[in-house]
Length: 184
Image (cartoon, rainbow, N blue to C red):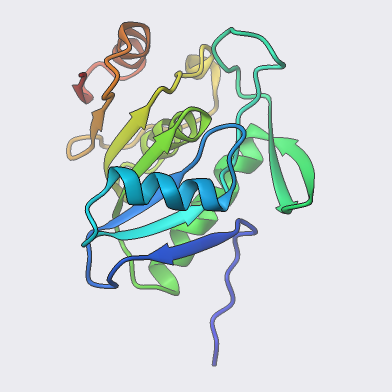
């Protein structure tokens, strides 16, 4: 009997099955191939890299921090506009799929740009399933304190912001004071 995946997100596996698993989320204008390249460039070859055609935040074309308005799902050439909550739901289903279908019970997240934003929020909403997040060039939602999310026990979760963005560090510290956070 084949187990059916519940998430609608497109994924690709690279690296050895026995490697430390990393879920890789690309930035706003990327795609599955972009996520695969990001994983290959940023992670050691002996890791299991799981690229995903990312759920995306949307800033309505402004330079303001994302407010978590929209994201895209569906066929690569004809995506459907949906909500930030739907994005987190699909990523949560993907975590379930990786556990139930692929045997990956916990993993690390690597995200760039909006993929990093999604990785940060996903990790805070599922700290029992995520060990570490590396968010490159990513913002943190300005309205996180008003999002209907429960932050679980973050005791083992760590976050790296390689570009050392002070504003993102400050926003994360306000939202989650006890988070293990490393800058550049």
